[in-house]
Length: 419
View (cartoon, rainbow, N blue to C red):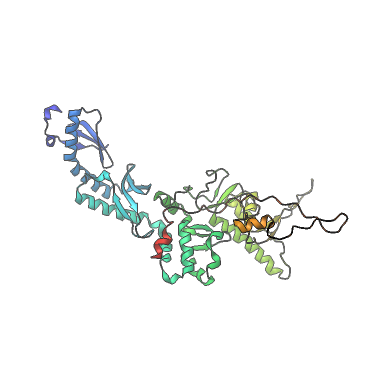
């Protein structure tokens, strides 16, 4: 090294295949992505010269590396943490200015500061073209974003679309505000891939693995994900209280919402067939075949709990007597729609009333005492008046069994669309 003198330009720097920079076979540092690290074992005097040599030789070497990346190394690029990465280092941060899923914007990181301007512009254009291809799985969400800006869609439909975007493609019916949506707008939304389910409103194309992984990698949905978007998750297959995006509880298991809807549809079809065959009988019992639910991985008891969350009630058949032979009698099912003040509990299979909220609800719960309304009369000894029932304990608030609520990058979309 000393024989080369203090002229850094005289150092013949070579980039090895493993990323090390060498001078006549001696390592002076290494490249991680496009960032150069000087060999820490070099002395202070040598370190200055090595840095100077690196600054002198690296622009040309990095330009060649960028050209190789665009022509042969695109398969090594990944998206994570909202950035395009190579060799685990961020090359460009990804943002969506204006409104979500418009044209993405790239901001090159400081790792590329030594890359010549011409090579830098070429690399940025190449990364942008690569990113456009990678964003194709989010085309259904882009279509929703466009519809949210379309004045011809109507304010009610736009409001539902905005809510669906904020929730990353899945919302419960209770949060959808369907009472404000004219029925004639549903075909328009169905063309955008929106499914109006028994318990959930969702965009089925966004329940596939590719869009869910991409939303997470872009930093647009930081909820837990199931990489393969399996039909059913086993008990304990998710973090406590944090169900992966796109799933709802089914007893002790969890099921993807589109498959839950297929199970609900089969049950409704079975009920409709019996109703059509016996139109004069009210709420006639019917049979529900659990074969579909079991085939996707649900346990039978969890399937019954899932159906119970949609209003289906099962009267279990009596088991065969000991020593009896033959097929057991089938379960009998009835459907009782939920009242507006009830909320399903797919996890326990029971329905619970909503806990009263606000001052008015608390007054009702305490009998409006102090407002001049008399208390219930006490029965006289030997009289025929029925005694008042003991006060029922206040029910606990029901578990949130629908899809996880949205939050994060889309939360301001409504404000953006107002302009």
